[in-house]
Image (cartoon, rainbow, N blue to C red; front, side, top):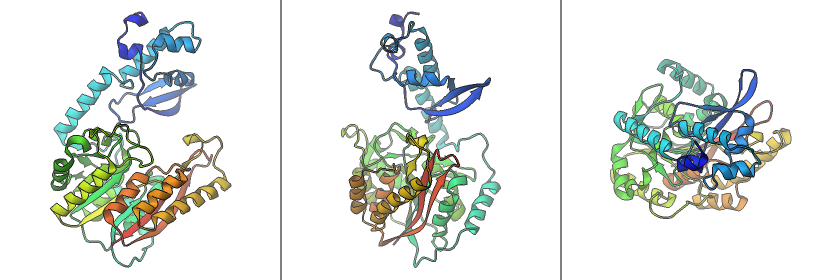
Length: 399
């Protein structure tokens, strides 16, 4: 098939956001491409040099133009690469739309997002791990009960000390009527606040949505807050907190929302998506109308530095010191308890170490309206090679 007769989405390919992982195949180095939204279970391995070609697939130039620009003698390998990307749903176009539609239909039928992963722990295993980590964590001895906590969304092996530090703050809390969990949309499509009316499966049990609050939100903001709810399917920032909440409080319903970075503007203010301001106003109104006790959880990692995040040099001892200095400067603004003070400082510094959760941290201050914010712990997780450092904190927002 000549390039001129190809479907337009292949002839002028536009690649979706993807994740890359290094691997070995038959003794050769390859790059494995994965759809972060997990629309398809298939992954795709390519030679490292193919990544440079794929990055040219931005929907603006044809296959022939891309091949010519890279001084390639033949566009056939580029066509084959585009077709393979399309097969696994990594190109915008009809294949992506079909996979998206199939997943939406499946989720609507089941009513919940699956836990994900191929080897889930048993309920006893996950409860044992959480209980063990909490037992290793000191009582923060707070005066009163928090109305909200900030804890990481790192994987448990790296992040458990701050998960446990935050959730130990809830030792003397009464079981709330609901938990509002605010996460970060790492790889989804939505550029506004993304809510969901679906529940979540965890290794322990099903987590039900708080339908009373969610129905109120839908009445206030319509479908704009839910149009991208598929973004929750493979997003980890909400799901990693659910077992902790179940372990602490049992069967309590949740309202889950992914909050965008306020330092990055929405693509269009056309009411097709929900802004953070609209979300905060609507959430306050919905919670006031429904009543009861709400616990807020901000699922937040802080700095992301090192070669894995595009920095040229590995993380060394001095870089760790510099990162902590930046973290504590912005954290000082957060500890004021004033969402406007925190956001102003984030804008002023331009987030030099890539805090990924400024949006939901700001939102939880605005919703919880704390009288004080207590820092319980601060940690840096860094691999031995210095490729990746992610910092996090455990915070208690007091009523």
